[in-house]
Image (cartoon, rainbow over all chains, first blue to last red; front, side):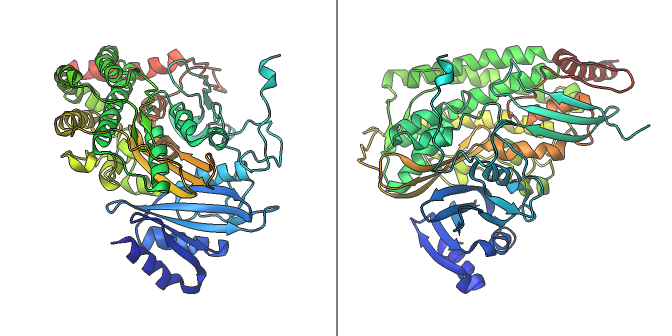
Length: 155
Length: 395
């Protein structure tokens, strides 16, 4: 399977739900979609196209929070990234994909904790990395968060 | 009797390990009925730190994520940056990258083997493993100048060349290592006690491995045939002949077999690289990294490393996502530990090679006897079981 065939089958299946596709080389492609279609498209990628879920990553961009879901087609060496752009930075939310793959269990907890993204339907969004006394509503990987100076070391 | 189930907290600090974590085992008698883990004690916010560094500095920052696989993150990072800028790497540099990667795999697997031996009460394996790992670190010092944190990688190439006069030294040390490894392989894989101690213990099924997205030796021991070196070729791996080692059983024994056999492949890869390595430049001296996004993947000793970098045209990353292999392998022990005995929990947690089982500060709280167990007790429990099996088998 080539990367064009993968993009073709995503376009055939989802049609107008796909906002944009672009390739950045023979082995990398990015597909932009609406957040509401994420579960369907992830299920299609994993179950129909048999891709492997690498990881998801969130990006705090100017016009919203992007969630990128990276998938690999292993024998062929491609990475196809599904990008869902959440416009609402105040209360970002998207459906959970943990019902489709358990591999997203930890990363959704992490994005919830570090970016403040709410994964609807995920019942286990306990903190994963930050200390228990971390203040509520402070998301360290948002661009608005400035790392405090490490003055405590000097005192 | 109420529904109260004793809980075993493990961690969060352990002197043997490079990272702290906290396991909570819920036990019913000898049996583990639930397990949870709390990580983050070592969270340094490196993704955030990287955003405030220049691209060249980021490579040094990610090198400090892990002391064991300290060239896996840099190579993934530079590959992500090379993906953004479509930067070509000279042929000789690709071979040197493969050599460094495989040396790292050798010493990492050796280290794991030693610790696994210790937890099972095979302290000779521990001594051998760590003794034979030393020459690998010496080769590393010859090639890169450092035993750890090699600072070898840069965008567009590598920083140091392998000198001609060093090649014969490296080959001699590798020949010695091969013999020692062969002896170790026989001592471990032909030991009937270890067979009955490790076979059928902590099985990760193929389906679960795929569902959890398990990587590296953990996935390959469960029959999932994935290896980034072959599937997403980088460095010089597509220019030489080698095999991906897989096993189908998914138990601790299979994971041990995969790691031991992989070391033979690594030695063979290094030998072929040294032989085939062409002369020429080692750095393409690229200029800036343009705006764009890039993905890097590399097979670390524990599985696929994954970096995503978004650049907005300035000289520092706008976003740098780092996914280490253990992040995916970690949650699988919900599948492997539950239903097993407490004395097996130690080696099952170690088999994932996250950073071996955190046995320090381990306490069993039992409502009946108020049993309190320390780290030594937990290791002793594991070693005791091996001893009993040995006695039974040898009469």
